[in-house]
Image (tube, rainbow, N blue to C red):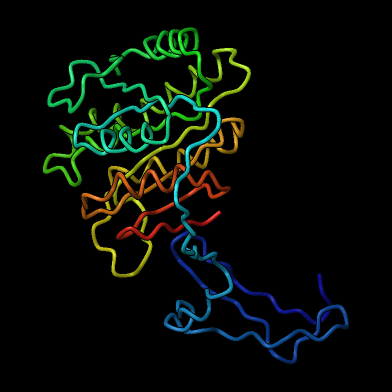
Amino acid sequence: AVPGGRCVSVPGYAWQRQRYWLDGATTLRGLPTASAQVASASAAHAPEVFADWLYQITWQALETTTPTPTDKPGCWLLLADTEGVAEGLKARLEAQGETCILVLPYKTSRAPLMPAYQIDLSKPECFHRFVNDIFESITLPCRGIVHLWSLNTPHLPHDMTAASEVIYEQGCGSVLALVQALVQSGVQELPRLCLVTRGAQQVSAADDTLAVTSAPLIGLRRTIAIEHPELRCTSIDLDGTRAPQQSDALFAALWANDAETEVACEAMCVTGHG
């Protein structure tokens, strides 16, 4: 025991809370102790208290250049949506001399273009078969795989329970199955993987169209980047207003091929952060 100390009675029940503070003049083993000060609840939660405790994401505008065809054309796998974004991206890539292969979920209705492949999202083995067939058949280097299936999910479904299976299959579920198939395929040089979302990132305080159904893909991308850096996984978030220029912005972000891992396209302004 510390000489000169005082005894206190401790409550016998867990919900009986009692605070004990050191007096300002108290010494502990000959050393003076600082006076204890109790901050008010409002002061404890004031913004300035946490200003230096948390990280803040800062978005910066990226420079976009006029696209020019490459000397050696490549191949792109587009896991296409049914709203025309992949169709527009395909046209822009082919204008640069690239080859595109469209992939749709099995029994997809309202397909804008005839796909080369269809995958049953409920069967992970279909992804393994798809990856093996693709890399055995293509002769051009595969530059990237662009996942746009999450654009098919409702922005804010009225019945989240009923839509949850579709949201999972066309979002995180299909990405997870695709990544597993890629890393187990034995391909020496894996293509870059890009996850396309809509309205999942808040670039400015004025953004009020955030889509909770797409947000999990942002977190999954960060996990993929850590566990499988060879995929160079990138996320590109499109404007939540569904502007017709989304294909142009998506192409600009893909063709830039820079080191940004999270990119957002807001009103044709391409921004990103590491």
